[in-house]
Image (cartoon, rainbow, N blue to C red; front, side, top):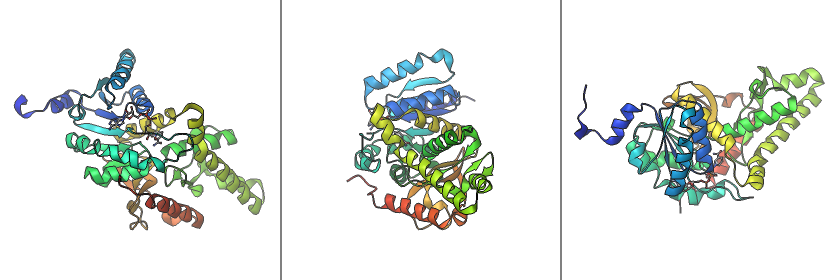
Length: 337
Ligand code: 6V0
């Protein structure tokens, strides 16, 4: 039936004509890589970009719009947060990035201050949205966004170690000479220097990687070779962003691909298992840890459906690594000073 325009905001009217709207806040190098990846996936009817730099925003949006013949998504620059109303997913990429040598945690104060002007208006206009935080330090900012938003915790997530996991799988696959899709592995914990590999979960074509080593040689040297390989690849993963930042000033394409995959999983209610930032308390045994960090999450249309309960299956040093990641995150102040 007809809806009275008097009780209908322009945002609500648009939401009816464009059923799946996705918002990207921050039209910098990361925001645009996310936007572009989402466009090529044809998963939404409208993509809205937000930035405080109006000319830059207009330029980015025009440039994306000019490819309109090649994708079916409508692209708009938001004039105000009202234009983002009824977004299914809001992706936050606004804020400063690491300078060469700077750690992610060092960005906290500057980026937390920006969130005060971003999270409340976004949630005001999209009260049922999923917030996907990408700005760094992503775990601390996901925690802050959850506190500011008042949303249930399954609806506030961060891209977390999904990117680190892709880096790990790619680099390991290269060393093994096997396609990345056949190499399953998760990096968990902080997206940053204290991340760790869930070693027992690494499989190649469904075969535990550790088993592959054990078949080749005696148990002791197999174990050493397995640990050394995982450690070497993980060190490359931790160094990866620093290396790229030193070379080109920032990273954007890999994170854009990770975000496109996360958003697709949400919009299509895929229920994929992804290592993304969530509240630690969803893991039995970590209830008292008041931090957000990456754990294996089943992700769907309403956010995190459940967290896979891997804690009892983790080796003692993996549990120590998880504890160190929790402590690294707890020792950094969460609020802007
Ligand atoms: P950039 O290219 O400087 O873009 C940031 C954009 O944010 C700029 O266009 C700003 O104008 C805009 N901005 C600033 N304040 C606001 C505001 N209040 N509202 C709206 N827009 C605003 O940085 P880049 O895109 O390279 O990086 C953005 C963030 O992503 C940084 O914090 C990075 O550290 C982080 N990354 C996170 C990754 C992850 O894996 N989670 C990966 C790469 C970068």
